[in-house]
Image (cartoon, rainbow, N blue to C red; front, top):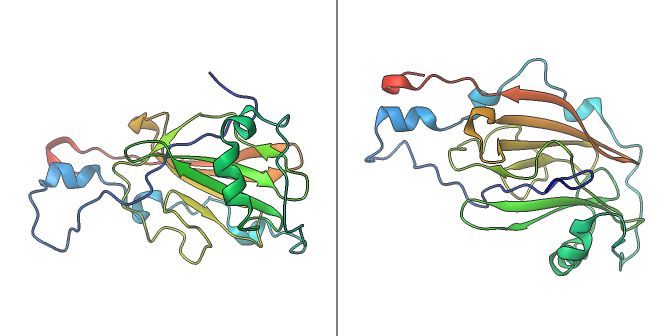
Length: 199
């Protein structure tokens, strides 16, 4: 079921890719499937500097959740409360909150710490990253998980992985937070041909 402004993603909390610098039983065909930072590189993609936040706003020490803003707020209130208690980590006064939802999966939402409003995206309800090996993609962010890239001084949020577990749509999805929610502004799809182990 798609939620209004749905943004419940499943992204791995820990990288599952093998270390290619060590001897491994991974075949060249299997190695080809792993998505690296080079696969996600896109000269036309927006940068964090393109979407600066005006100032880092002060929020209260005990932000409240607005349960009416999104069904995710009520369903995941415990984990969201734990996350927002840590303070802002995105776009000045927002918190990107995420939590595990199974093997190679994490759900996520964005909370406005000033209003308690929970926002999500409409484009897909889950993203997986079983073949994601791109820890070095968009370095220098405040991200706590390699499936998300964000900064406290920017309104740009980048989510990487396979939406709704559809590996044919694996890529980087660029969102901007505004008062009415998260808006998809750019997509970089990974294009690979791994037949016979050749990218």
